[in-house]
Amino acid sequence: MRTRLDVGYSTPWCGDVVLAVAGWWQQARPGCEVSVQRRSSCTIHSVGCPRGAVDVQLTEFPIAEPAIVTGPVVFTEPRAVVAAADA
Image (cartoon, rainbow, N blue to C red; front, side):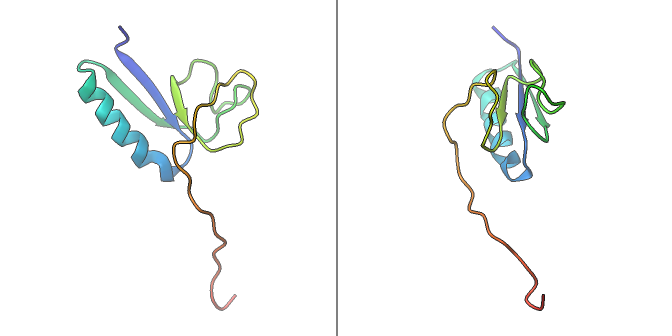
């Protein structure tokens, strides 16, 4: 049985979700260490997510990497343009 789970996330707005799941994982599997790290991108060919760097990554789409398997969408965030009223 694995005793460590390495989790990555790419944007600050999903960090709280990752930390909540990491806490749940540690309670469900006592003795399993969870390492959470922010990674700016998730591509095999970049420094962001080289092969074996993390076990699971929470990141935004699109990901066009044939060596990366994507799972279901966990949550979505609306997007908006924000500007000063006097701009």
